[in-house]
Each structure stands twice: as C-alpha cells, then as structure tokens.
Length: 137
Image 1 (cartoon, rainbow, N blue to C red):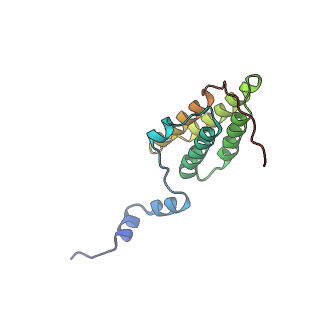
Image 2 (image 1 turned 90 degrees about the vertical axis):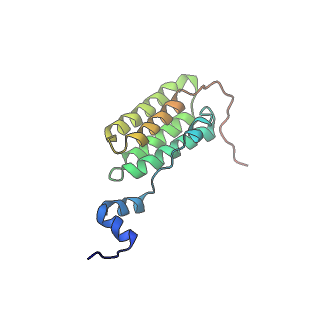
Image 3 (image 1 turned 45 degrees about the vertical axis):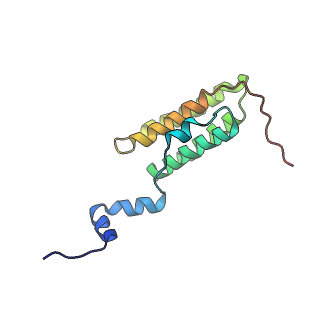
C-alpha cells in the first residue's frame, strides 16, 4: 500500500544534500541578455561582473573562500586601470581564472564557463575612457 508524503520530504529523500546546499547560497541566475547588454569598460559593468562571479562561486565553491580575495583583486585592478598598469588586471584575472578552472567539474561547468566569460569581458573591454575615481560629496 502506498503512503502519502509531503513534496519536500520526497525531495529530501531523493537528494538530501540539495536542501542544505540551497540554504547556504541560492543558485545563480545567469541571463545572456544581462551579460551581453553591459559595458565592461565602465564601473557599473565591472561591478556587475564581479558580483555575478561572486554569486556563481558562492553557490558552487562553499568549502574554500580563497576566491573572495581573488575577486576583490580583479575589482581593484579594473577600477584603478591605466595603460601603464594593465598587467595588474591581467594578472588578477588570470589568478581567478586558474582558480575557477581548478574548481570546474561536470555539474558546474555551465556556470563556471559564464564566470570565465565575464572575466574575459572585464579584462578585454576597451579602456580608452575618461573616467575619474568617484569623489565623495
């Protein structure tokens, strides 16, 4: 004879780790329209990219927090970009790319590829812009 159980209980029996995983960090929402509609030579595009990478890594890499420092390095190097210091952005992006590639596997490949794409867009965005650092006031 069959038994009636709640849908949540059924899901927990099928995949007990899923519930804990989604409580720690929600699944990333990746939209191609969002990614390709941004201008990554401007500060808001750079911040969007780093926050989206953070969202992806928070969900897929919960045991190691080294990526947080690497993401901040990318943000800092992109914000303080100039032609003489372009190597800093390249080095920061490469460090984070290596980390992402090391954490990539078959179940998270799609999301991690999106993170790599965002890094490439930030790194290779046209930098001939007249942008001054933000001023208080």
